[in-house]
Image 1: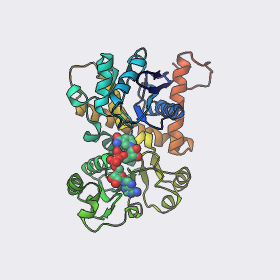
Image 2: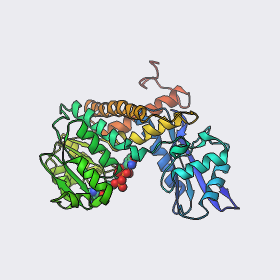
Image 3: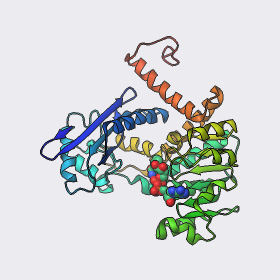
Image 4: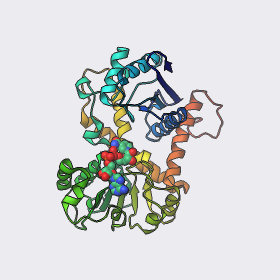
Length: 371
Ligand SMILES: NC(=O)c1ccc[n+]([C@@H]2O[C@H](COP(=O)([O-])OP(=O)(O)OC[C@H]3O[C@@H](n4cnc5c(N)ncnc54)[C@H](O)[C@@H]3O)[C@@H](O)[C@H]2O)c1
């Protein structure tokens, strides 16, 4: 889409809608490319299928500076250009460069409250990051995965790298479930205590001092020390590629749950697989946000605000089931959990496409003939 008057340039990619309407956030970036949006839309296809929710893959993007004073005019022009597609084939959502306020502009421009999710609370939306939905889901997936491996979460030692939106909520929920959090790091350093860190105190310190909370907690070690702390479970919840071959070869963890996106390198996954260390892949473990987004999609035209308890309940049910399904499929088929999760997602999309008659139906597709 483009608009000569405002200079707006943007793109909507609907990757696959066999499982349901394409859904994925809307980003604004000065370096945006069509290829980038297309790749993100494809990722959304696999994410929805892997968590077994009935949306397809889509993503939208606007080329531009999100801090520009012309932002509102550009967003309005983008919404108008997509008036035929939104909300029937696509619904705006938040991604890099867009805020709750921007979601409000989209619904105003199209005169339709269902045109966007991610609205401010005053317009019926819910602040996912404040609620800690993703970290909560990471903890629920950890509990279910641990049980599958015969580990009792109560009394198990956990190390969490990163104490941001995801890490802090995961630490809080894991503590509630009885785990002993023996290591937590931020970019400023690591706190470690074999008897358990006081997660509540660290959270209060973070509210005042951000990442420096670990220094104020006392006896901080360097940031990278967290990955070497003796533990049963490791939750990387900071950034990508932190679990490399060296960490994979030396960690004492029996289970790794990927709170961050892409925290484990491809070769480290192989090393972990050979060592018999289970991994719950990122798009299974950190899918709490997309489960919450699915809930918001469903509630767009409701006059009632979504009850956070319903969202937490659904995240728990879905993520527990998915973590177990992936570990069991990996075990059964001799695959890494990442391969098993991708296979599960691809199979679900393929079956949906065949059931719709979009691709030829062959006799060896599990689930199609039977139904
Ligand atoms: N927020 C969500 O809902 C969500 C959803 C899915 C995936 N994720 C992914 O989870 C990860 C964390 O997201 P977030 O929202 O919690 O971010 P955040 O910015 O709130 O927190 C990141 C944390 O990681 C720490 N960190 C950064 N580099 C580090 C290092 N080298 N060593 C130790 N700690 C380090 C930071 O100090 C901070 O505590 C990212 O990969 C993000 O893409 C987040």
